[in-house]
Length: 324
Image 1 (tube, rainbow, N blue to C red):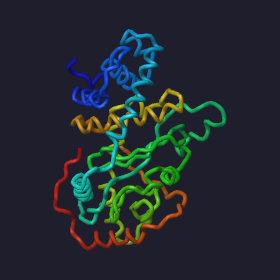
Image 2 (image 1 turned 90 degrees about the vertical axis):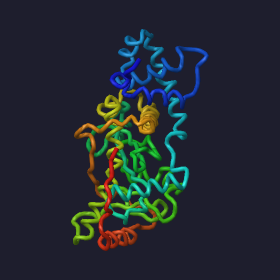
Image 3 (image 1 turned 180 degrees about the horizontal axis):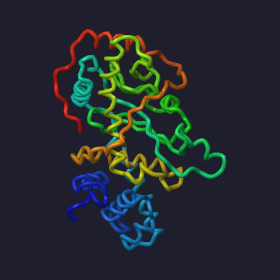
Image 4 (image 1 turned 120 degrees about the horizontal axis):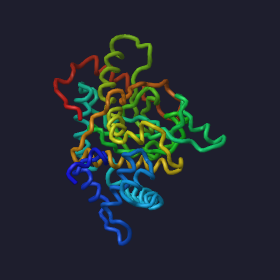
């Protein structure tokens, strides 16, 4: 097997890295490699157990068992793969490159970018299904994620119904409640769907329309340049796992968060293996929403004003940056 991407959406290097992370040979069953390939093919072909069973010559019930088992195993290694910067050097690289993404040194304290991604699902029947319909009127479950300068996810939180606003998802997330990241004096970039905060979770959002003066316009432009990396990260993952993210995920809604988390884990593994899949045209979205419900927190508006003044006072960063 020399070419794995067309059928399994991962390069050979990524596949080997995934198998290394899973790091086990099963005493029973078809073996770790075959079962992992069954799982990946299931993702790649649109979650059809019937198609996978024909391709591998297995009973459909066996495919179902393998998919659920391997999904649980991939989710179990998420903390090895999806994690905050672990060393001062790692954090410094994040801060340095985010300033390069923004092309302005005023953003040298940006330590990540956050956004929410709705994932289409087949909703449960009955009245409970209505709560999964989002503002675009399709049923979904929300993935909240923070990425670093490379588009690697450093925090994920998934499971809320699509009707819930991003702001409410944020308020209930461990990232917000535990306030473990970013370090003091640093912040995470967010779009207008989030509140501008200083505490408990430092979030810097763009100025809302209509803009008053050149300063906020310049600030928003640099802010968008840096924050767009999270949109690109979602775009890369959607392009790789098109059958999961570009049509309704036809599994029980309680299983959806595990599948999404597994995809996020593999997204990071692929980036680490140099297996970069550029987002298809039209997949990357960059649409800011109006700010949602208020949260009991300290506003970051004065901090944003200071950054805006710094943008107006300083020249742009004279550096070229290569996006991945």
